[in-house]
Amino acid sequence: MSTRSGGIIFPKILLIYIITRGITAGVYFAYCAIFNETGGFEHVFGRWDTEHYMDIVNNGYHLPNRADGMANWAFFPLFPICCRGVMAITGGALSAFWCGMIVSNICLIISSYFAVKLIRERGLTQKERGFVFSGLAGDGLLLAWFLMLAPLTVYFCVPYTESLFVMLIVLFFYAAQKEMFPLAGIFAMLAGATRSVGLVLVIPLIMAMYTSYKNETGSGNIFKYIGSIFARPSRLLSILLVPAGLFGYMLYLYYFLGDMLAFVHVQYAWRHEKFLPVVGVFKKYLFSLEEPHYMISAWICIAVFALYVWMFVKGLRKEAVFGAVALLIPLSSHMMSTPRFISGSFVVWMGLYYAIKCMKSGAAQMISVTALYAGGIITIGMWCAQAGFVM
Image 1 (tube, rainbow, N blue to C red):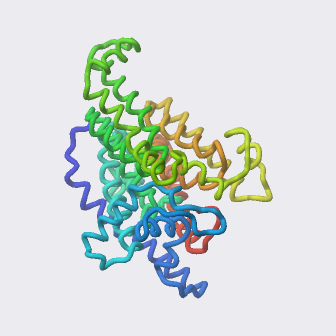
Image 2: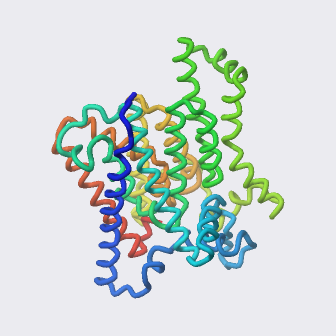
Image 3: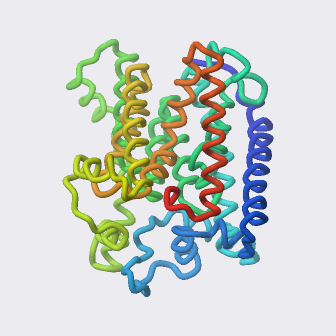
């Protein structure tokens, strides 16, 4: 475990943030100039789900007023609550969009800071080799670059829930690493109020507690471990906290609509095909030349599952299990948005950082990092162009 102070991280994180936001702005202005986009910044970066989140910020949850049946209760409440908080602090001077931008970008900076601290604590930054890991990219800072400029991380700086969700995941794993389990339970609870798959964090929490128990007792007996949880109320409470965020929203939906699972049932408006879960989804899209963006998504999912297996073998077990289960949940219904969900799980970037660090060839490292940066810039452009792949 690293004992280095993280105090020097923050100024570097801010500098990386400024550089990457400059690149994002450059792509935006280039797109506007080339394609004569006149809608403005809010029009370009306030698309798709942003409209639903901003509707919740401005009007709260309400009955559907769209012919397609989409309803804003499909979107969880914590992000809009944070946006309303910023709106209250600013006295209503800022629109919901700009309040969402502030929330997302603050969360992005916090995520990047604690992500670097996390991998330092885990000892993953040891023996970084070559000029790929030097200067503003050395000592774990490469992970911050990934969170700010890798493929589909454009979602982390626009009014979407991804940035808040990533921040809570990072804080959860950091607290679990430090064995601050009640705090980890609180972060997991808040993640469950941000996206339903936040509930999956109960698995790595139990795994982290088991590791702690083995280190304390020298015993790996499962039954004694279970007994130790009940013997230590703080750990039992930590586990019980995890579903509270999701269940709280379900209780609200019950009183609002009479349906605790309304957020699940409304998904029919976005995806109504019926597949054999996971297997059927892959069967339809893995070689679907008629829908190339879904075919690409399917192969990305295969590659990411392979990465998670490698991570598990290399000792990143909690992260790998969380990432795999969190991906299996959306794959049980459709391929839609799975690349975004992968990016928004955070652990994929932790795994890619470690995989690149383990490469023995400096050229391979450079090619991998350059490809990720290029992919990030391309997906910013695809967002501006409203390409279906980034939806």
